[in-house]
Amino acid sequence: TVLSALADGVLTLTLNRPEKLNSFNEEMHLALREGIQRAHDDPAVRAVLLTGAGRGFCAGQDLGDRDPRKGGPAPDLGHTLETFYNPTLRLIRSLEKPVVCAVNGVAAGAGANIAFACDIVLAAKSAKFIQAFAKIGLIPDAGGTWSLARILGEPRAKALALTAEPLPAEKAADWGLIWKAVEDDALMPEAQALAAQLAAGPTLGLGLTKRLIQDAATRTLDQQLDAERDCQQQAGRSADYAEGVTAFLEKRPARFSGK
Ligand code: LHQ
Image (cartoon, rainbow, N blue to C red; front, side):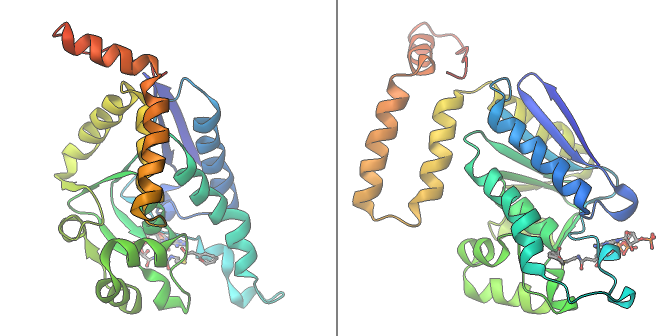
């Protein structure tokens, strides 16, 4: 349910239940989590590219698995989140390597919010983002209330979440929710080139940069200056810093090892 391929430092993870618009069943949850865990554990992985097979990126939870007409005990969605969604969100955010997301088509419910948790999001112009939760009586999960409120501010976050109105990719880019919207047939080439560029980068420094930017929101300037000092000390001792400066002085492209 998730295709996984490592080439030139880029681990490409492709959600692969296209007949269900790549909506999440338990198997796909576990496969995605395994893929991102591999990115944590395998030093050969220096960037991740997340995308979807077929015409959609991800339609959120597979609601076919959740048919109330089938009866049974009252659902415990808190348990579902804690068991399946939240670990994946935490793994994406805590990965000290860049995660590029190529949104190839509709991203609805948790599918949209998983995209927003990635570090650099490109979307096909035909793609749209839908906080579908309001249509089925739920709240935006998978970090949605956090990302939307932080990125957009309350007025736009509330309107999107309360109405479930689709947000086209270009508007999502105008609003700063994603990095950019590109022509549909340019999406994968651009996303792959970006992921390859990041994978050839100074991985340690990029990972520290990601962490610092994420942590900034919960720190004072003083705390952040201390954190920058500590991270720069670490980066300054890396082989890639020495290589970067040497390459600059020798007027040639740097060859980063990721260390
Ligand atoms: C689907 C789905 C889907 C199953 C399309 N499930 N089959 C967390 C905790 C626990 C429980 C609840 O959820 C959560 C988090 C969440 O993500 S809640 C939000 C769940 N997602 C939604 O409510 C979105 C439902 N889907 C849609 O609104 C539409 O399918 C969108 C707007 C995504 C796409 O519309 P269209 O382009 O018109 O495609 P379609 O509706 O025709 O879908 C194509 C097929 O995919 C279709 O199957 P069929 O057999 O009829 O061809 C859909 O039934 C299936 N599909 N989403 N979430």
